[in-house]
Structures are given as structure tokens and as C-alpha cells.
Amino acid sequence: MRFRCIVLLLGIVIFFGFCASEKGNTPSQRDAAHTATHQEAEEWAGLTLSRLSIEKKIGQMICEQMRGEYVAEDSAKYQYLIKLIREYGVGSLVLYGGTPQDTASLLNRLQRESEIPLLISADFEGGPGQQIKGATEFPANMALSAIGSEELAYQVGKVGALEGRAIGIHLTYSPVVDIQTRPENPVLSVRSFGRDLDLLGRLAGAYIRGYQENGMLATAKHYPGRGDVELIPGTEFTINKKPSEQVEAEDFYAFKKAIEAGVTFIMSEHIAIPSITDGSDLPASVEKKIATHWLREKLGFQGILTTDDMWYEKVTKRFGPVKACIMAVQAGHDAILKPSNVVETIRGVVEAVKAGEIPEERINRSVKKILYWKARLNLHRNRFVDVNRISSIVGIQEHQDLVQKIAASSITLLKNDGFFPTDSSKLGKIVNICIQKKDSNQAPAAVFSKLKEAFNEIKSFHFRQNTSSDFYKRAVEAVEKADTIIISLFNQRNVYKDNGPLKDRDRDFLNRIIKMKPKSTVVMSYGNPYLAESLKNATAFVTGYGEGGFYGNQIIYADSFIKLLKGEISPKGKLPVKVSDEFPLGSGIVY
Image 1 (spheres, rainbow, N blue to C red):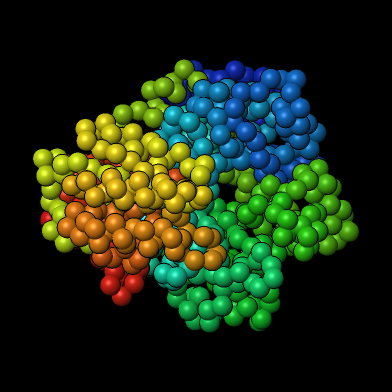
Image 2 (image 1 turned 45 degrees about the vertical axis):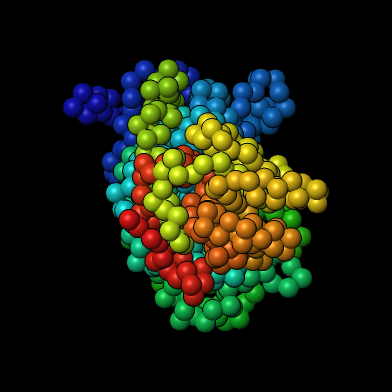
């Protein structure tokens, strides 16, 4: 009520809150509400738009990347951002890395330099912890599908929004709503909610509401659907070869559900779909039939359409770095993400408008939508965050408990030949055989540290790309003397190519181990359920749903796996995709 009274008394100041006097404000010690009314946002957006030059209108459509770590004011990186904000009116930044306090302080500094509030975005596919060290990091989307709980999907969005807004971030480039139907080439793997379209729609909707009902905007990606694509031979572009009826029934259905949930942003991808574009091989990022005809006119999306990264070499080589961005706007995009050269892109789009290639009214519609959502987030009244409050919101125990709950509830037992249920007293001497695809991956060491802390008698052998033959022999000798064998797999899919099969040498070695200990070998796959088919003779096969890095909390599944081995939890997850005929959609042993 107090805030409403202030609005009534100081209406003009609030409506015109972007003016120069607001620019000098310090971060408020009182929370601003995270939403303003539709009418207020419309009026502020209209007034603000009317004051912008064509150059600064285009600037509002640009989103440049930045690092979230501390940076000195006289550093080249900081001065570059200040120049974009002050001179070119760049209106959005996408953030990578940082710590909660450093990032928030930096964003406050940048907001203070901008005439119009900045819209700060980040990719929170795996939660805020995917980008911000110390923030909460969740397992990937497929974990939520393995559980099937809309309430948990909502809570993931809510926590992401609370932590994001506390740091000064307003938009997440998530969720992924791409369907996944091809076991031999799961392009998104655990990033996808899976194969079940109804479940995908319900969970994506709950996730979106969790974010947007708690003060952050969400993005459905990768339109028109990146789940079932393949590389165009000789290029780095991808193509969806499905007939139009199947595209509508599957890929577009998923985005329709996100639109029905009220998603604010949709991100397009550099994907061609000839069946719906009269045979065109142009990607959605520059193809008007996909970006406007299908998305706006047929699916009914009226929100903000952003490109994916436009600096990609495949894009700039084919179309030209500036021309590609002009084509994206002409196709129907409202926002341009990470062009290869921001200043040249702004100048190029301005020239296209002046030459009559893009109507200025078309620019006005896009910019007004962007300004409108800045106001709906209350950024026109308070663009700053209180750094002192971050530690009471970001990464708190309540949020970590939710991460643990999701991992424990989603862990999936695909094969069990009498190994489970078990407990510590039955395991005896343990040997952990770890296969890691990437030498740089730190997760295997972290997981073994947890295993070692949980079980006294355990040895570990880590196999990397160039492991010597002698090391394999020593592992076999240890296996012979062990009571229980744990096979830990860190072997992600190869994007656009295959499901990440084990190298022949490793697969044969592991199956040899399984033959040596046919009653006491348990496999734990950290983020790739598709490996179950190649090791189906193991006594037991367990999978989690986190690939690490940008693609979901991987290490958290070590905690759940240890609890499963100790008999403290039972498996509850159900497989959200088809791995093979032996492991179909919905597989999962529970007890």
C-alpha cells in the first residue's frame, strides 16, 4: 500500500523515471516491486521511444556479451561497455561468469551509466550456478522429466528468478523446449525435457511460470526446434528434414505450449526446415517464413523474438557479419544477440532503415516491446540491487536442499540383476573405474573425493584419452581382488553427430570387467543414459541427468548415488527418452 501511495503522489516522476535525475541514484535500500502495471509500462515505453534517435532505437535491440567478474574502471573491457552504453544506446547485455557480489556491483555500475535501464540476461539452463560461482546449480531439464513434477519445475524457475534478480539479472535464456526423439543422435541430450510432448509442455510451462511470476523473464529455445536436426553436409548449419505435418505436431507443439504459458522471449536458432518454407535452406535466424509467418501468424507469439549468437563464423561467412543482422531484423527478430561487431551492426541497420529496406515503424514495434518489458520489471523505477542482501538469497541452504531433492528423486535405475537394494555392509572392498571423455573435466576427481569420503575401502582408476596399456592391466589386477566394482561414466554426446558412444577400447575393457564380476558391477552414468545399451550386461545400471558445465549439475548425482549405495534412498526416476528397444521411454526400476 505504501508503494501505491507513492505512485499516486509522484506519478509524473515515476512515469518519466528514466530521466537524467534517476541516472545518478544510488542502489535503493528498499525493494522495488518486480512488476509494474501494463498501463504504466505502455505509457513509459511509448514516451521513452518517442525520445530516441534511430541510432539509439537500434541500440536497444542489441545485446552484447560481458564478463561478470570485477573489472577496474580504466580497463579496456569496461570502457568498451561504457562506450556502447553511452554513445550507442546499447540496451541489453548477456552475462557470463562472476561471483554474486562482484557481478551485482559491476551491474550496478553499468546501470548507473545508462540513460535507459539495461536489460541484463544470462543463460540459466542449469540454474544461476551455471554462470555465477556460489549460486544454485540444478540438474538438467531431463531430471525434471524423470520425476514428472510440475511443482518442482516451478520451484526451479522460482529459485532461479529470486537469485537472478538479487544479482541484477532480468532475463534467462531458458528453458530448452526442443523435443528429442532420436536415440542415435540426441542433439540436446539431457538439456531437453525428452520425448513425451505432453510432459514436456507441462514442465516447460511450470518452469516458465516459476521464473516469470517471480520477477524474471524466460526464453523458449531453440526455435524452430533443435532436437531432431542434423548437419548439412559440408557446412556447420543444421537442417530439420521432417515433413511439415510432423514439424507442426512435434517441434511447433512444444513452442506452442511455451507460448500458452506466457513466455516473454523466444530464441531462434540457425536451423533450416525446407518442408515449411517452400524448400528454402535459409536458417530461421534470417528466414521470414519461419520467424514471422509461422511464429507470429500461425503460432500466435506476440512477445520478443531474439536471435541466437550472430557472431558465429558459419553465419558471418555465409551472409556477412552486418548483413546477417539486417536480414534477421527483416525476417522479424526484435533483438540481435552478440553480433560480431556491435557498432558496425548498429550503423548497418540504421543505413538499411534510411534506405527504406526496413520501415522505421518495424523498428519502433520491436523497441517498444523491449522497453515495455523493462518497465514491467520495474527497471524504470529501480534498476539497482542491494549487494548487502545477496548472501541471504543466493545459494542458501533451502535452495541447495531443492537441488539435492531433484537429484535424489530423478536418479534412474535402468538395469538391476539383484544388486539393489544394498547397503555399506554388503559392498566390501570397492574399485572405481572412471571413464572420462574430456581430460579437462574436473567432475571425475570431485566425484571420487565424495566416494572416498563415503567408503573407507575404495581405490580408483581414471581412464582418459591417452591412458597407457599398463594402467589397464593394473586396474584389472585391482578388480580381481575387489568385492564391488563401480563404473563411473563421464562420456557426453557428440553434438549433431551421435549419442557419445564409448571408445571401442573402453567399451571392450568395461565389458571384460563386467564378465569378471557379473554379480557385483554397478554402472553410474553421469549425464548420458544412452550408454546403457553398450553396458547392458552390468549387474546394475544407474543414470543421472547432468552433463556439467552449461548443461546441468553433474557432481550432485554423486551424493544421490552414494545414498543409493548405502540404502538411504530408493530409485524413483523414469527414463524420459528411448535409449533402445531394451530401454524404452518410461523405463526405470523402483522399489
